[in-house]
Image 1: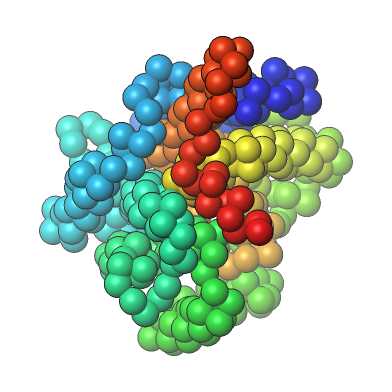
Image 2: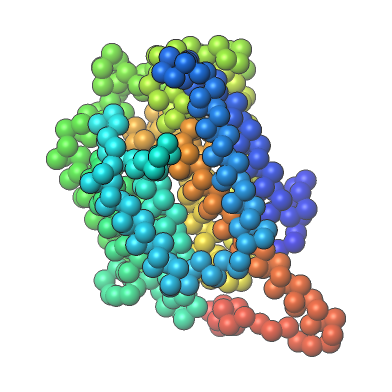
Amino acid sequence: MQRHFLIWENPRDAVIWITLLLLAIGCINVFSASFVEATDMFGDGYFYLKRYIIFAVIGFAVMLWLGLRGPDYHLWLNRHWLNIIYFTVLVLLIAVETVGVTTKGAQRWLYVGPISIQPSELAKLAVIMVCAGELGKRLKKHLRPALFDYPGNKTMVMALIYGALVLKQPDMGTAAIVVALSVGMYILAGLPLRMLLLLMAGGFVGVVGLIAIAPYRLQRVLVWYDPWSDPSNAGYQMVQSLISIGSGGVLGVPWGQGSGKFFYLPEAHTDFAFAIYCQEWGFGGAVFLIFLFALLGIALFRMAAACRDEEGFMLISGVTLLVVGQAAANMLMVCGCLPVIGVPLSFISYGGTSMVVSLTALGLALSVYKAEVKREKREELLRDAGMPPIMPTSDLRRRGWRR
């Protein structure tokens, strides 16, 4: 695990420094994208920036504590803690339906004093942890996940329950991500091909059905196909996003002078923050940001590939799908390659719950790295003492699989 990664001593340091750089970029972009709206709504152009910094500091502190000083990640993945985490988030999702606050036609937030919480974001992390714990334990027993037998499909059922509650808010994009995270982790755990194909077919039928029963979803698909067919109404947001991106050119307009945030582009500091970023930093800035997320993904992949514990491997893989996969989905959405599904761009979009969840997820991944480093040090001490290393049961099974 303690291998060099480009200019860093190891992948852990790479993850920490890349995350810090992404937070710095996010801080600059959120202020630029939000100061017009913040001044108009709150009389304080720094309103969103100050809240962004608070959540970033809290999330980064949690990340460092989990990754460097916190307890072993197996503690969080034992069934006792997983049940507490799962049912706590379940209660919060149900509470949204009863006492949640409706904003812009969606009931997605709970307010605790001045702080708003979006339980659907917590559901993403809960699904990753439950899948990592349950699927990892099955892999240690040489059992593959399944769709039609219990407990092989336990975590999939749990994710579908979350997805159904999030869909009711309504938030089809986040519901799709919650379910997609579990599907991705099932694939990594070795879901048989025939079951994967069956799952994909069922998912396709389900998505088509959900689009058919809600006219606004069908409209989003049609607008995605041709936003210029209705540029002043249904296609307005996508058209303005494309205009903002295109007007940035190669190097972008001067920072702070992007026109999109002057009430042209809705959600300029949240879901469509990438459009403002592209307008003010141009194609070169967009490539640099994509490069940073790619580096983060590669560093996490290196950590996962070197991990000899199935639960740790599944946990890092799930975190990668959440942080890097969600970032890719947002950028594709903003560029018009995917329908508008309301997915935030990790660290670049404004959103307190999303920020803390993403940083906490990275902290759990770093916790896996910390445990692997400790294991390597124990084995090194045994070798120095002339004793054979203690091979984990999971590693013995992997050797058996290779044979």
